[in-house]
Length: 177
Figure 1 (tube, rainbow, N blue to C red):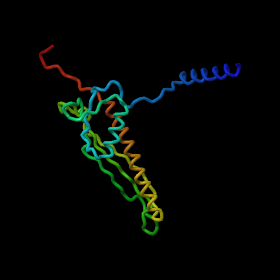
Figure 2: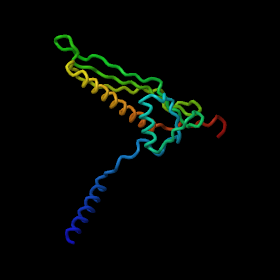
Figure 3: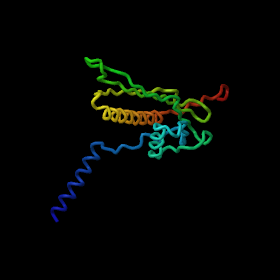
Figure 4: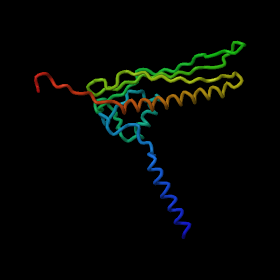
């Protein structure tokens, strides 16, 4: 009986301590104060970036993805998505020792009246990767994993930028005051 009370007190005490330190579970990246409630994603269906973006938006529950531009309050499109690989360094025999992987995405958001809520913005990420010709398959797998990781980072950055969109201020026509 005394042991149960001690466990209960310990559990309650740790709960109080956690709440007092400001600990809070991370919520959705998309805030409640978005200037729109529905969005159309102008991204090809077979795009892996588009699929991950759709999954994250649906998971947030804050924003509804619609099927047509006419239904949407906002239109998100990705005019360009580019992956690039360049040589960083060579060894003494002239063979590649390191690569730099780049992932560039341009994103923009417009409302249904074609007013830009987020002008075309380029997001670029870079990862360095060592290379060894004796481990070609492993290094190809590492490259795929790094691109997938960069894609996830870009999706999170896109969602943060969408969440930070401020509604356009409406200016009253002259003489209507």
